[in-house]
Image 1: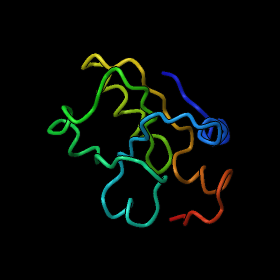
Image 2: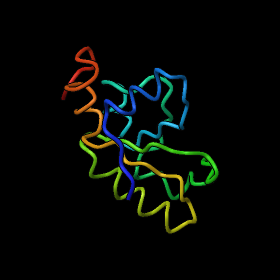
Image 3: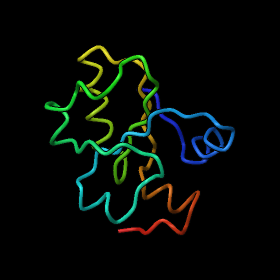
Image 4: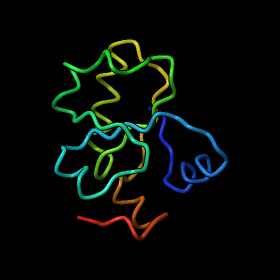
Length: 105
């Protein structure tokens, strides 16, 4: 499974790269904090919303700490998705390493 550090993703975004940022946390978590421009599809809803994702688009999947996102990547790979990247440490690491203004919970 490919992964990316928060710092490397921040650098890519600063350069204007725009992978799909897929937030797989629950709605309550997303309301606390999220990456700007991210798409919310909670892990529990993924099987019913799979058609909303494009397997040809690079997708950076994130959650709170990186565990759920890894499970989602495994599920998506089973449906033919290949351009998947796990955000190491999730939104919590983003807050600690990139943007301390992002609330931690």
